[in-house]
Image (cartoon, rainbow, N blue to C red):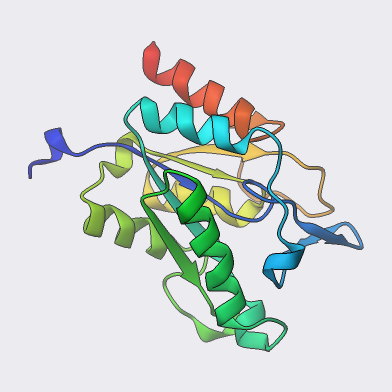
Length: 182
């Protein structure tokens, strides 16, 4: 398949974008079990609109709590299975490492996005990364796609400025769809 026929993707962080993050001292944390997993309002409609517009939907999520023993991989994968069952998600890529592991997949490194683009034959330059953390923006920038930041007011610095700032996934979808229509 040549690059002209590749489709664009919307890469989606999981926690804070698709589901509610658990806040501890102003910092977001992933739900550890399916029982703690709560979808955010408007997620289904937003994903449906993006899929209808022809985008591949790819979840790219850092899940270091598996490596540190705070959660187990089976529970994380149960959350991913639910997402794939309920929504038109093409793939889920998860990094189970911590920064000290030095892997290529942990955001802000672009490894998950690049692997998804290769495997799913995606046009990464025509794609967007949507996330609620500086690591998501960094991964999108490093991969060469547009970045949409969902600003949830976390108590953390933003080393790189995103291309667009929105309040939630429905607003991110509207922004992306407006950009591709112009």
